[in-house]
Length: 116
Image 1 (tube, rainbow, N blue to C red):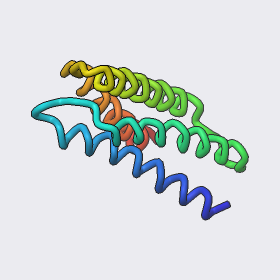
Image 2: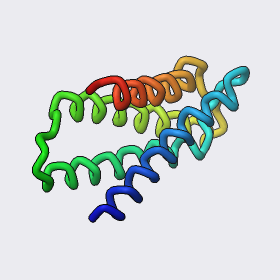
Image 3: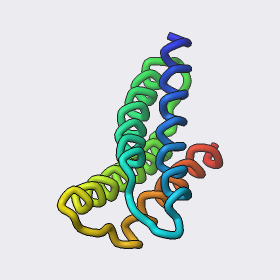
C-alpha cells in the first residue's frame, strides 16, 4: 500500500508540473498545450485515488480541503478541455483561458502545500 501511495503522489506531482510548467513555458504567447491537458487528467485521477486511499486509512481526512482541491482540479480540467478543443478546430485560445489553466493549477498546488 505504501508503494501505491508513493506512486500516486509521484504521478500527482508530475501532473502538477505539466500544468504549471506548460503554462510558464508559453507565458509570453499563452496557449493550452497537450501536456497541460494530460496533466489535468492526471491530477483528477490521481487525486481521487489518493483520497480513496486516505479514506481507507485511520487518519481523518480534511473534506473541506479535498472539496476545494476538487473544484480547482475540475476548473483546470474544463479550461484545458476548452482550450484543446479550440486548438483542434483551428482557433486560438484566449489569453484568459490559457492563464486560467496555469493559474488554477498553481493555486491548487498552493492549497495542497499551505493548507494544513
